[in-house]
Amino acid sequence: RQSERKTIYSEYAKRLIENGHAYYAFDNTEELEAMRNRLKEKKGANPQYDSTTRMEMKNSLTLSKEEVDKRIKAGDHFVIRLKVPASEEVELNDLIRGKVVVHSSQIDDKVLMKSDGMPTYHLANVVDDYLMKISHVIRGEEWLPSAPLHVLTYRYLGWEKEMPAFAHLPLLLKPDGNGKLSKRDADQMGFPIFPLNWTDPKTNELAEGFKERGYLPEALINFLAFLGWNPGTEQELFSVEELISAFELERIGKAGAKFDIQKAKWYNQQYLRAKTDEELARYLLHDLKELGIVCDKEKAASIANALRERITFPSDMIELGRFFFIAPETFDEKIAAKKWNDEAVAVISSLKDEIAIIENLTAEAAASILEQVTARLAIPQGKIMQALRMALTGGASGPDLMITMAILGNHEVSTRLDYALKTLGRK
Image 1 (cartoon, rainbow, N blue to C red):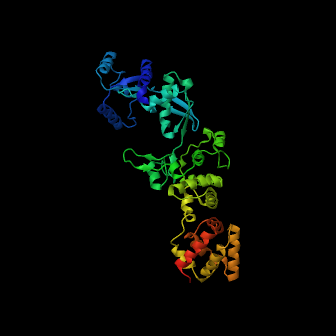
Image 2: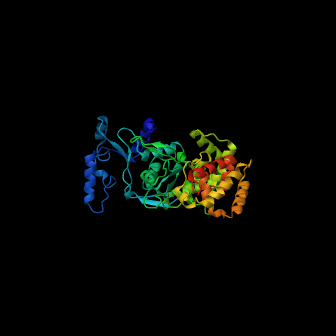
Image 3: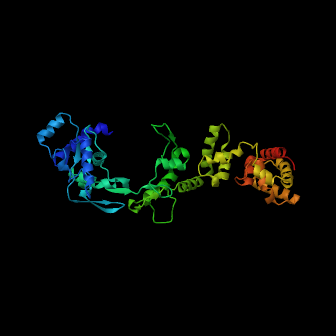
């Protein structure tokens, strides 16, 4: 923690002062505000504490050494500021933006250390990165204006050769591209912004994380890698190992990247579909256990296979496949009104009886029996399929109906068809 490293930061701040690259400033809030207001009235003047204003202010450059020592000993409020040169081109090579040149007149004398001994980011990040031998500083583009200041700090501390490479990433934008993405935007649009569940310490409000929402780590990594970066090929799905091999900071664009949550969902779908039935079944079995529903691994794998093309998150399986475990007690009203008719009743009545005597009901056997029944009754299958699905699942859509019947088994299929006939009536 920075509070435990105050003596380290103080040592380097004093070194900068001793070498003439920093100074003590004793100006109070009112004096600083007066300076800014005075400069605002002058056209073209930059209202900041810099080489053009520092000699008018109350600091160790304008006060005698005796006065400075006296003020410090008396406990007067002070800060330590970097002494930025008056007229110099400050250069850095950014891995994303190339050569960046800023004139020192645009850089103010930033505060490096406050009177309580705590460093600001400008000093702490330089000192910490140097001591930890950081090779690359990768951060958002909002820090680009501060980079020249950090370059000067490295130089003045004698660390210019050890200075890390800089890469200032483009901002993440709202899905429509209009403005920087914020937590409020994510909340309003209904998608996560944090990797894990996070509780706001002020409001105690819980923000759901990507993990808890059901995003797979590998899918989220793949999605995030493509925010502002592209591999130069048409390939979109990368394993972590492939990303490590292909990723280059230099291929990140300068423009902001839209945070397209629909694309994030697409990645999650692709990674889920690539899993085996047994892997998907583990997610389903976990959710079933939470609900107190018992299911064997083989049946769970069959259900996972039936639902795999329909899911975006692992939890979708229990939502979309609830009817596999709980027989419907009510039925889709629109389907019942439009499709439950004499033809549907005739087919379902015959199908119920013939399915009941099949010991090992497979999808193929279910399809064959349905074909025989509809042919015998001279009723096209297309006219009764929605009614049949409704009778078995209660709803209007779902996975392949023959596979559904095979998973349910002959006894359950027959029982559900009988319940539908009794509940909806025989036309």
